[in-house]
Amino acid sequence: KPGESEVNVEKKIENRLFLVQDPTLEEILKNRILYIADGHHRYQTMIEYRDRMRLKFGHSNGGHADYERTLLFAAPDKNLIVLGYHRIIKNIRSKYLENFIEKLEKDFHIIKKLNDSVLVPDKKGQIGIYFQGEGYLVESHGDTIGKEPLLGQNIKENLDVQILQKRILEKILKIDEKMVKSGTY
Image 1 (cartoon, rainbow, N blue to C red):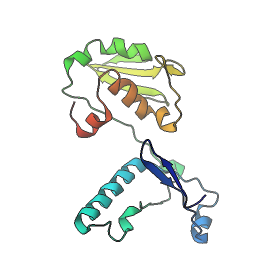
Image 2: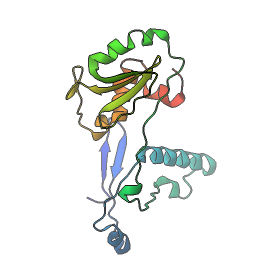
Image 3: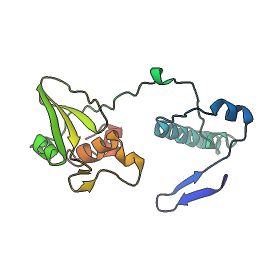
C-alpha cells in the first residue's frame, strides 16, 4: 500500500512507495514509457548530500535532504543513446593475468579474436576485451556461466555490467566492486 514500508532486515534496506495524485503529471505520463537510468548514481549522490547536511546542520536540512529528487525529460527513442560500460585495468598483479584467456574460456565462448583491434559488442550478453594486443569478443556459454546460473532472482544480476563485474573482474581477476570504486587493485 502507498506510504507503507517494506523492510529487508538482513540488508538494512527500506523501500517506500508513494502514490502521486497530481492530475497534471498523470496526464503528461499517460500512454508514455518512462525510463529510469543510472538511478544508483543519483541515489548515492543523494545519500552523500543528506549526510553532508546532517554534519553541517545536525539534521538533514529540515528533512528536505531525506528525499531523492527526480528529473524527468523527453527522450524520444531516436535520441536515446545507451553508452558502453568501460573498465581499464592497469597495474594488476601478474599472477591474476596468468592464463587469463584460458580462465575466461571456462565460462565464456570466444566469438571473435583480432590482433590489435578493439571489438565492440553488437548485442546483449557480449563483452569486448582488449588484452595484450588482441581484441576478443566473448559471450557466456548458454544459460549458465560455468556452473552458476546466468539468470538470477534480480534483473540486476542479468545486466552485462554485472556479468563483467562478477564473472570476470571478481572471479578471474579478483577485483571486487569496492576496489573498482576506489581504483585500487
